[in-house]
Image 1 (tube, rainbow, N blue to C red):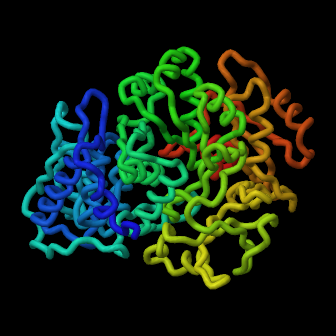
Image 2: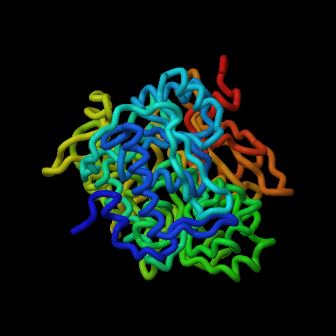
Image 3: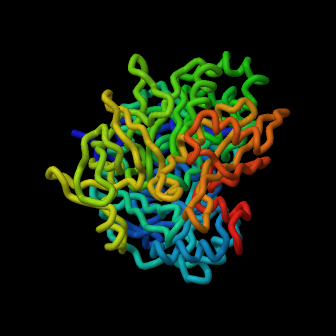
Length: 514
């Protein structure tokens, strides 16, 4: 019988097994983490916070953030927020979430505290010792709490985690994920990566995002393993962290992998001394060139996976050896069923057709909160199952590997000719001077959209727009060749390090009036 709540998921692990680590800190054991969950539950109940209440968490990346999520989610509903938000953003999210309380670090007086004060939301202060076990903390209400609540514990269908979609083109949607969703996804990731108690993850992903919260943290702990929590991503410190943490794996977005690779030649000794069992990549398409460089540099399998918030992260994953890891593919179904759906009709297509990727399984959100229009658009019934439309276009090959052509809203429509930005990216990345490339739509008065690209050159490499366009012109049909190539020192990224296509033309000042 599978665990269906976070408390059940973490119960069978031996007390003395290490759970959470951090730079310069002793390990917090799984037994200590269970005790901390009990203490946190008592503190929440005393503050009038219990089952079904929503607790926003705004903490820096690190072991306390990890421990707060894991422990609070065993009593109430967690809503981690990006600490970099401004006051107006915090006010929007706290109100939208209907937060019953906000957890902040002791002494934190920034914009989140101001937003909570403005909205009259109670604050719980988290205090931790700098030299105590990683993740250990105490929780105290600031001022009088709410009336005491019942002591009921969350069940499988209760919401454990609430996140917002990125909202690049519309108001962010609220994605509730249940206790059972979390458990299913942790189990799926653990199975895909063959995670075991001996495994240790070096987490560099932000813990307000589904990738870090589920792929690194929850799946790592659920396997009985350990998670060493870095204070964020820093390529200059990554190899020092490897020496201290002694991880067997790490997971990151492609831009992080590229930054790590740029530092790898001068850290060959560390790579040899701390052999990794695998490297995982997700949250954005991994260029085949980066895949090969990682595999060659670290001498281990590179596992590209496919995830999104509405699926509690993982949907597909390249398998471990002896099966193939296919560069450019996000792998085989790894948890939910994965099918190809018609983009405009509620029906499934043959796998080798190109269409919208759809999923069905125990890790899929019950539906967007308070948004019947989005639910009607994104969910449909077919073949006796409920399917979720991912918004991605792709096709399944004869071996069941999923190949994405891009986000449907990112596919460039050049006068009726459809262009996959991922295809153009892959060609540009083959240019010897190009380190990063992102292809995007540029508004055009007659065609509707034109193909454009932003590139970052390798250190000490030289190339101009004409050379890059000529290179692409020799390898792509004429309508796919970028008409505009912008060479940048750095491409704008989102909060999780993902390159963002939508709105890039405006950000780069390529649109009149932007």
